[in-house]
Length: 95
Image (cartoon, rainbow, N blue to C red):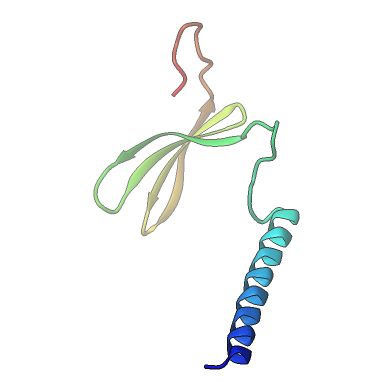
């Protein structure tokens, strides 16, 4: 390989990395990644999970001031129950 082929390969590598970087910046700019911005509180979180068997599990999911009990499995997902979220008592550790 002479030096022209090395320069061409290096330029191709730099161009590929630049395109990957631009795609990442565009995805971040349009909100495709990085769901919560700095200073914002998350609205959705998994409070607890319980494996029922190798294929199904129960999820307790908190969204805003509500908790939802979900059954997740290969046959589909079901919402089993919805209730107001429990408030933490002073001195109690967060889950």
